[in-house]
Image (cartoon, rainbow, N blue to C red):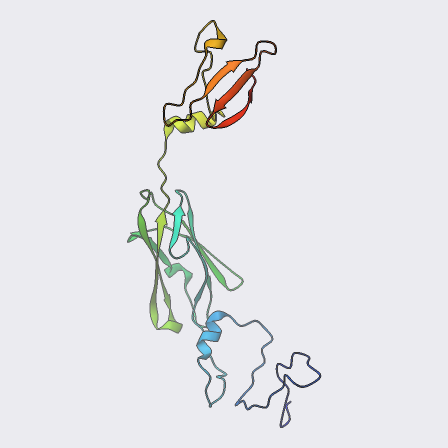
Length: 222
């Protein structure tokens, strides 16, 4: 297939100034993308050539929550996707845990991948938590554990606020305060020097915002 010499990684450079001579002990060509686990199993370069028989471990493709994730909300679903290795692997032995509490996962296998899903238990706001995934992989010598941490968001349910939001209420100013004379209506900022006064224009019957929080504009009554 190859002669005494061959061009590798020439970058289509016809001038040849990117070409340097070198020596390699062996070359492998694969017709499929190699997984991270396969590349790791190949090991470091060596004078004995690239291994032709490789024991590939199960590897983690993705996980949620991720390692050291913050602001995780209640109801977030745990999801871990594993890439199968070269040895026999039983997905039924996968066991996720949160703070040593055993979860009941839903496990699906397709296209050489194993997807693990489970609901997180009720966790306190701002709490630091530990996730652990246990399984058995003969390529790694048997039992394997992966551990990482995440932090819950600073959520604190507010029943009053939730009810207001459901009513589409964002703010409420009681401008007339039951007074007969609208020109007597005032609204003052009790905190700081930014006093505000609300009055009406006599001709147009518009609320005029003379000065409120340092801003100028107009408010129309509803």
